[in-house]
Amino acid sequence: PPPPPPPPPPPPPPPPKSKHSEALRNVVIQGDALDSLRRIPEESIHLTFTSPPYYNARDYSTYPSYEFYLDFLSDVFREVHRVTADGRFLVVNTSPVIVPRAGRQHESHRFAIPFDLHPRLTEMGWKFIDDIIWKKPDGAAKPRNSGFAVHRQPLTYKANAVTEYVMVYRKQSHRLIDWNLRQYPTEIRDVSRVPDGYEPTNVWEIDPAHDRVHSAVFPESLCERVIRYYSMVGDLVLDPFAGSGTLGAAAHKLKRDFLLLEINEQYVKRIQQRLGMLARTVSSDNWSK
Image (tube, rainbow, N blue to C red; front, side, top):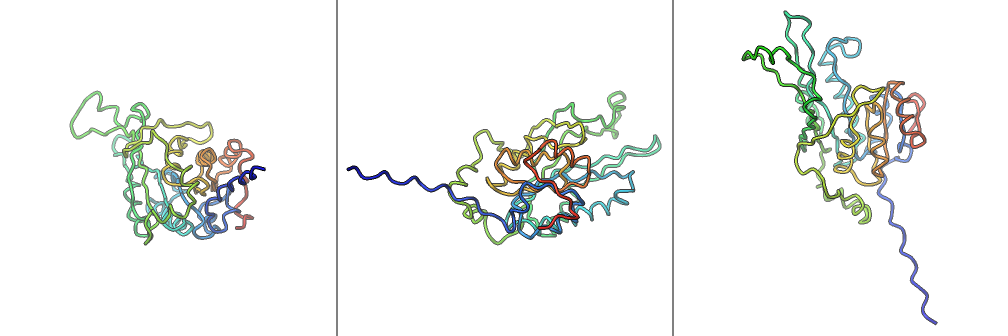
């Protein structure tokens, strides 16, 4: 009789799991970002992509000063550094904030958040990798100086802001990226390859997104690019300021797991509507790792 057919090949091994990761995967934690991060075990996260809350110089109830705001973000990203696996990535979307003038006798003011935050990140152990420009359509910007269009006086020109920064950092490591790649089986590396049509430059032209609950949401296509370029299939991605949960939706679509932190109850409800049964929601008060 003919020899029996060979047994089918074994299924591909799962991607490497980060420490204590199962309790973190596809979870929404409602609570303060810093408090929630402190409960996460070290080296649990493969990629963080986030857009920090805006600084409003006129709202002293949230951030008494600009320095206080930067200190808060520094504390958050220091904890993100602790929970990030060796040699993995932090991607931060931010931009200078314009505070309109209070009256004709006053000047407007612009806070250079990306540039003020950058040295703090590098000092705490994030290695700077790339500055990506997210360019929106010209009509997406609010006019900064409508009077200039009329009188055209020199010295008064102010550009309409149609760009934001997407700053890329890697947790400093004595190992090269090749070492990170070798931690995955060949099958995972193959299915994680970035497909044709990727953006080769550092200028990404992407339309802004709109949400009925959250006024400043990630476009899902922006999240997808970041996830494809800076993580592997099966990885755990984090957003400590999750908003409406766009990162979670994009992560699930690309076969990554997500961990979303959000303090605003209304936004958490929006995430629940958006992700449904994909996510488990817990309070930071009773969540344990």
